[in-house]
Length: 163
Image (cartoon, rainbow, N blue to C red; front, side, top):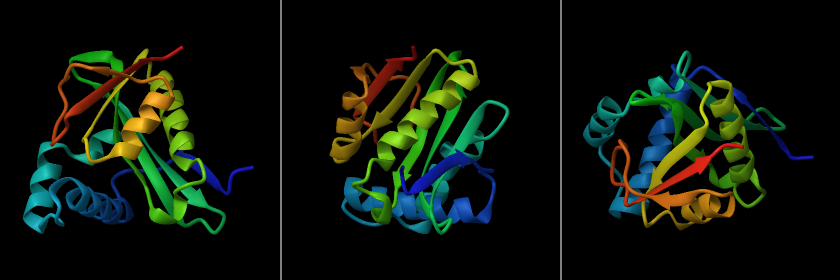
């Protein structure tokens, strides 16, 4: 039995905003080689707001440990250009949750959420520096594809048809 639970939570909260700052700080260090500034974070969120990961066209999933502590998250949203395709966004596992299969758990929960939203396909993007993400997607049936209408500093795009 895993030492966590995964379930939907509202995305428009101060706690999620704090976690997104942590997420973007780590992404900045790994992708840019430095922490992003507050101005850069605001610009990213203005271009690609995480609030779109809530109902009616999305869902935000949070993994919590046995003490209800935040261990990770992932969001899904239907693409405006193709509502049968859902995009995985903001998948993040805090260091305390790494190495125990939580990434797999979040990925499977996101796929279930995509099905509930009516999607038949999931797409995502990542960066070359995020080798763990690329390996996870490949391990669970995601195939590299040409770019889609994503955002950011991606240089790898993946897709999976849901069964």
